[in-house]
Length: 174
Image (cartoon, rainbow, N blue to C red; front, side, top):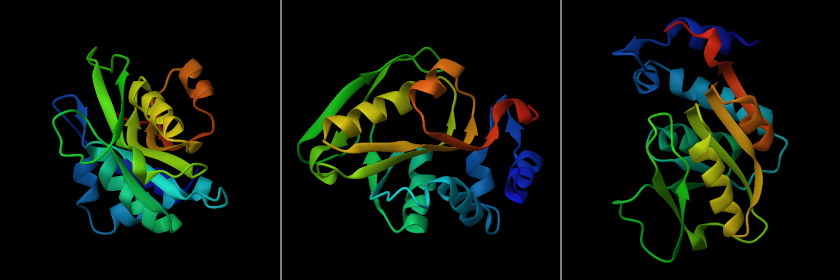
């Protein structure tokens, strides 16, 4: 375990039953340390693009892209401005039981681009799995999933390998 792991476990707060990862990003230098920790397992993976899932994933993924010297691509939810040709897929139900579609601009991933998917937290893996399918539908190569917190079911984690996380959800206090 890293010093950053211990810091994340100690500092993550819960409000109304929900973790406040965005609140941690407001702390002095926390976001840069988080980006470095999430990027670390993939430094030698020749990642060309980092994909972030709307909304919180945008913050962390864009910082990881800078950390890895890669481009950032946005995976959007319905109702957002996302010009140009898109690939859109329905995601299985999330932790709330809600289904939603995710979209990716087709032109932002070139055939053969190695794409890392980054998010702050994954519980069911529904959006991460759909993000992977979007990347592959655009001709990209899935490089892996990197998270601050992993709460994935074992079968989903296996399907999404390689998966890296700073902490497991069961290590955190609710």
